[in-house]
Image (tube, rainbow, N blue to C red):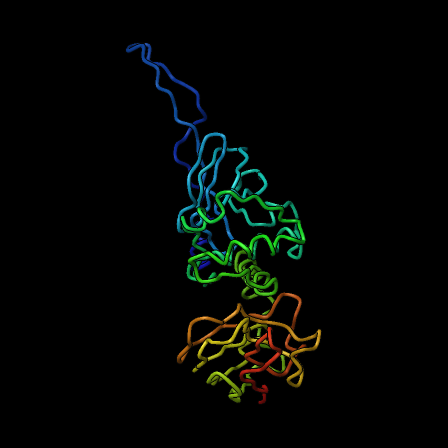
Length: 308
């Protein structure tokens, strides 16, 4: 789902009825009219997450394609996927894994594990267009409970994902999950235009991928202080755990190198376009080269250097 649509949804408080459960009577007719309770609409977001089961004291159901759920004021809400139950949280207009685990730390282990789970079970494997939790995911985890704070979380979940009929049969990487969530938070906080002017000396630099494997080709240009645009992109999609990676002078194994995209394994790409956003704590000073980088084998399938 387009995050601007999510933001527009959140600008409006959805009230299904006015009043607070009182009653009025008509002396002439001696009748009592009971006002229905006031309900509100909240949104669960990693991207918008469709198909999460939710339950409050008065409401229950599945989040809709926009990630929306219904609640009454001051109710706690519980979200679940099969037998996997997230901690209760006070209902509010926006709920993310940060609210679920009562933290502001995006690198909190429970938050990361929740992000990995949600993005992995997204049926089409593309969290950028929204996350869809299907009935098959609920069935897969029907008899399972997990500890999101456990170091053994990945092992337990991976054992089940081998039988999943969605895009992934193994948990996506921590880096991929956190990167996607950072982009979501940036859009929610309207940070697209913050610190993204075109003042850096590297803005306007570009390059063409040198093809090293899997038919990689294309062009990349630095658009502003935190955005790279990839165009005319070709890649057969056959590598495992592949991301766009940046580094200094093609050193992508350094601790200073980092991913700037979700994993792009799976589908093939023909004349595709990507808009790549730098993580909040990174800048154009941190790199001068870009690679289609296979993390699992530390191999570059194609790379370029940004030049004027």
